[in-house]
Length: 270
Image (cartoon, rainbow, N blue to C red; front, side, top):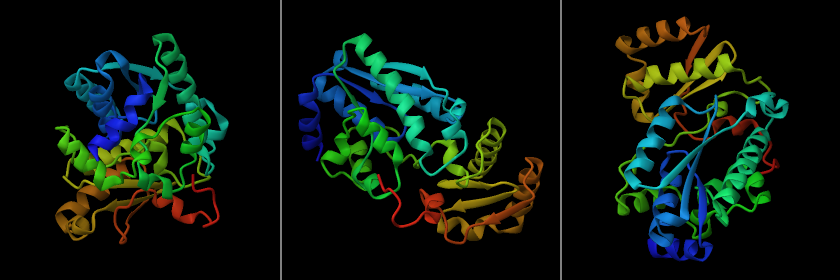
């Protein structure tokens, strides 16, 4: 699979990769370095209010270890009403702005193509951001070779990436129920709530924000531990301090994209 990935990247000649610091985009950056050489690869990270602070720290560390050129662009998706209103196509507007900025940067650097870390499993979920990427002519090397989430982790391990076991992360805006307005205050509250739980070694996890209610998702193996008296009281105290009135534990456990479960099966699945 690694050889197939390299073969899919070589024809690009040069590439700017949208780099979040996660496993998927790390694999694309590392493979691009092997296929094209350091002088033909640029990693680009979008910095905004929706990016957890630790993710930017991780991204900087990974690009430093890889020795790849790395640029940070500031995006202002919160200024876009279509994004802040949190409709089901929210991600389209965020990604559209991102790729406009990456394209400008790539053109300035003489880089021909843009790529991302979308994998084959992503294509089966509601991902309007992929539509924006396609509109911008972005290449999806992992999806092109049919690499799903587990394949990507194996590729990361084969490439010697230190973050090959890193739990999947996502933009903080994904924590809010559709139709619930996204605000700077809400983003910070969710980030602090997740930081608190992460300090209890509960990865993978999500805190889904439903206004005055927090819905906590953890792995099925962690459900019983989370409900134990020694953790429960501390979680309640911290979450109420953050302003939540109701704190719930999702018995279905952690799953990516759970906010999409309310969407019609006929909704756009890009």
